[in-house]
Image (cartoon, rainbow, N blue to C red; front, side, top):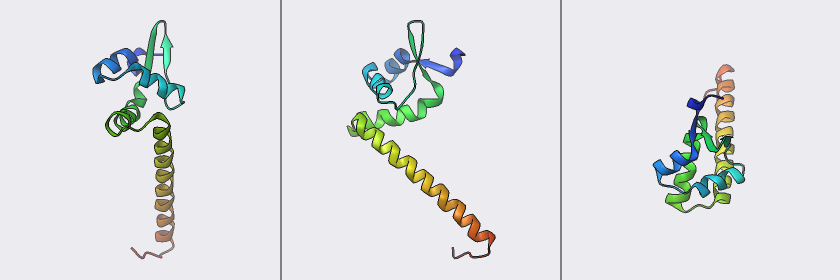
Length: 100
């Protein structure tokens, strides 16, 4: 494990002025991964964008943890559907049927 790929939850929460308990709740719900090294709880940098989105949902829109989970699931399904539509459109173009 390399430290440059993680941020301390303590530092992250202090910087964004949020409660560590919120990050812990996201972890307990299975929405994020955390790593513990000695006494430090670390958040992978690869999850920062997602965690910041969850923070905005919770603190700006008052969405609870379960609601965040539902929203993420719906967004994932929407993204998958959009990808499928894109692939199907490409197939149609390949066969010469373009109504766009």
